[in-house]
Image (cartoon, rainbow, N blue to C red; front, side):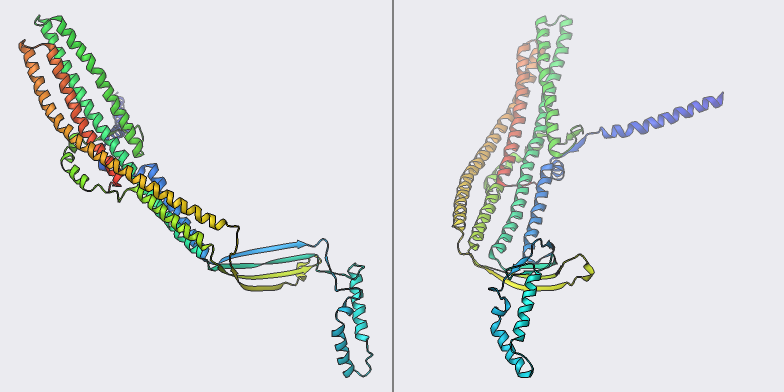
Amino acid sequence: MKRLEFSKKMMLAVLMLLLSMVFIPIEAQEQPIALSLEKALEIAMSENPTVKVAEQEIEKKKYAKKGAYAALFPQVNFGADYSRTLKKQIVYFGESGGFDKMFDPLINGAEKLISGYVPDYKPGSLAAAIGEASQEASQGSGSSDGGMEMGLSNNWSFGFTAGMPLINAALWKSISISGQDVELAIEQARSSKIDLTNQVKKAYYSVLLANDSYIVFKDSYDNAMENFMDIKQKYERGLVAEYDLIRADVAVKNVEPNMLQAENAVRLVKWQLKALLGMDLDLPIECDSKLTDFESELFGDYMTAAANASLDDNTNLKQLDIQNEQLRNTLKLQKFDFIPTLSLSATYNWNAMNENFKFKDYKWNPYSMVGVSLSFPIFTGGSRVQKVNQTKVTITQLQLQKDDLERNLQLVVRQSLDNMNTCIKRYGAAQKGVEQAGRGYMIAQKRYDTGAGTLLEMNDAELAMTQAKLNFNQAIYDYVVAKSDLEKTLGKQAK
């Protein structure tokens, strides 16, 4: 019996141990991840898909640049050909008589030479022998009009060909354009990071604003509930009228929806932040900052930002500059099409011809060649001139677009600075408003407790204090958002 009780205790202990091993990691996973603004930006730069795509684009352009350099090296190819002659070509050597008519001077000279060395030689023997051979060849070829078939049925050829440019100005210029493609891809990647930095900052600030707004509405709800409970006790003791109890209850019901809406806003902006960071939307996070942590930026950063408001690092202008340089190089490349090109080529082939497929009996004849080719463009119907004119117009268009963009960006910079300056003034007024509203609420509450004030006065004071706190938080939020937009326009990127 004791052994049975001991076994039950052991099983219970093991079960408790297993349960603890199962539930402890789950609880640990449910702990929210604390995020600072710097940590959020660091995660975004490493996990956001947009940044990854931009970095892959840089790699692709680098490979394209290496591919452009390959055109400067020799291009070596191997090839093989086979052809079957269905109807052989017939060659004619003049009128009927063939060789004897065509080579009469040569034959006569040969006969004179032979007759000088051969005493019994009969003049005309060499010519007759050649004539008979020509006639036999013509008859053997199947031609009845004095022609002779040439070639064999099977023709085989294989070998290597090589070529490389020696002088090609257009090719050299195209390589420099491919290098600018890499530069443009890098600037576009920087643009993606700047835009992502702005989005992450604004999302992070939105979480802080939502958190602080929720705290304000929660405090307002707690105050309303506390007043309701206090008035309820007084009503039960007959110290206040039922109207005050109803008003206090309505005040609680009016504040509660705002608190719930603020709570939902916190959840929504956290989802937005996690999406930008490339995180699982179900992963719990907490921003370890408050909007009041950025109060110091309102006093020192504005003057610095106003003094350093230069568009030299604006990514859109930089991209237009790179594109403008690309177009100018393209214009030079098109003009280089008027320049002659010089290229080197080499060939080494093996040829064989036969009437059958007995490869072991084939006789392979090597053939090699080295050559230099000069190409001088003279007339192409005016297409090159029209391409040059089109590129010149495109360059003019791009310059006009840049001028217009620069004016608009200067307007954006001034608007951002003006918004920052307005937010500083709003912050000062809101700060004083919070102080006065808090003091007014305390006075209204004491007046009501002593019977000198009404519940309506206390509710108005509570509403004024809530609005003052919201205005205070909104002023800080609007400032940091305007500053972030200004940094984006100026091309500032988080380190």
